[in-house]
Image (cartoon, rainbow, N blue to C red; front, side, top):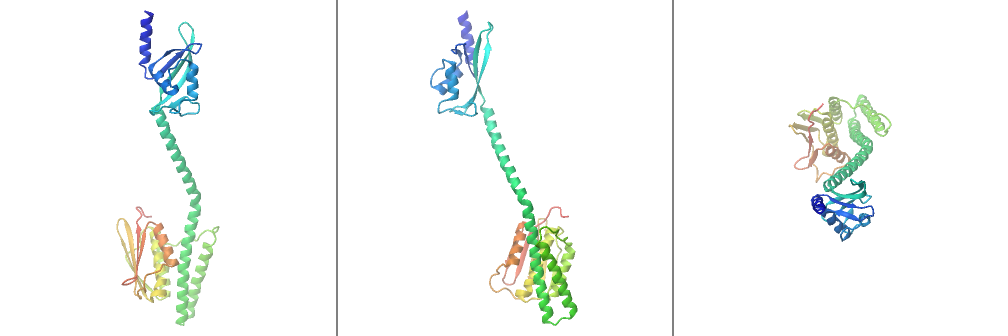
Amino acid sequence: MKRSLRRAIKESVDNLPSGICFADSNGVIVLCNRQMYRLCHVLMGRDLQYLDELRAALKAPADSVTPVDADSSSLQFPDGAVWAFRESKIADTEGKRCTQVQALDVTALYEKRVELEAENAALLETNQRAKRLYAELDRTVREEETFAMKMRVHDDMGLCLLTARRALEENAPLSELQEAGKVWLRVLDRTLASGSAAEEQPEQPSTGAALDELLSSAEGIGVRIRLEGELPKDSANAYLLITAMRECTTNVVRHAGGSEMTVRIQSDERCVTAHITNNGAPPVGDITEGGGLSGLRRRVESAGGTMRLESRPSFVLTITLPREENPK
């Protein structure tokens, strides 16, 4: 009867998916199921007989077994499965104490842990990159503002020089020379403002005022600007096109000897395109982008647009900018 009972208990224990074994008070294994025997064969290369053998094997397993935690209680076996070993003290119905060791298949939990650790590492790297970007943000913004101001000063100084030269060559009345002097003072103020990061930049005029100022300055150097179409409603693109018009205005007089510049602006749902031409002589050879044109290209590309220069059969500057979805 006892033998049949033992056999039934052994069969039940053998059918458990987990490994399990029991050791008496002397550390002798008195019951061990098939799963635990299989695991111990991989750990030690032999059958399990004593509890101390299992403890030693968990601390120093075979080369094919890899610990996955600091206390070596969880091990990854050659087939990729991860087993967690847990030792506990129990007592039978007669009060005799023994030691129970369980081996639980925690492969799914381990894989989830590895996945979470990888995600956490990626998040940490993203956070570190974000911190670096934020640290650079103020400096980048200041540099872009300073660059934009320097471009404006560059263009205005060019217009001032051309206005003064024209007034002197044509023996202009005193009133025109005084007006040129006022422009010089305005340019000087902008130069001082762009060179001081501590001072607040002067408020930018409206696009309409900026355009009127450009048209007036162009007339001062003998260039008439014909504008076909309307400036975009979003101010960023509008200011950028005005900057392009200002650069081309000085180039009309400096390099082409022209007196008229035409700006055709076309818009659709996705972009706004400006074609700038003049009635001056076409460039001789390919156009070399100096400080003004190269700076303009940088600003256009920073805004997500494109800039194309053509020299034959006549000068054409084409700028395409993406439209804002909700222009203010």
